[in-house]
Image 1 (cartoon, rainbow, N blue to C red):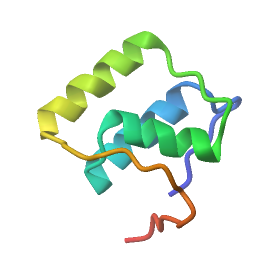
Image 2: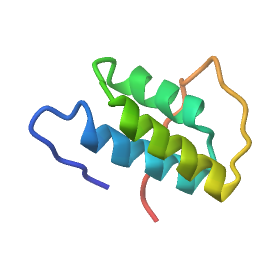
Image 3: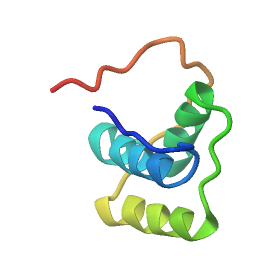
Length: 77
C-alpha cells in the first residue's frame, strides 16, 4: 500500500492509522505508537483523532500496547 502526501503528517497518517486499526484489529494507541515508531513527526489533528476513536469503537477493537516494534508488517494481501 502506498499513501502519498506532500508533507505526510496529518491526513495521510490518519488514513494509515485507520487501516492499521481495521486490518490488524489494533486499538488507536497501538496504531499511533507503531506509526510514530516509523515516522516520528506525525501530527494528527484532534478532530481526526476523535473520528479515529469513534472508528475504533465502531469496529470493537480491543488490543494491548506493545513495547517493541522490531518486527515488520507486510501490507500485501
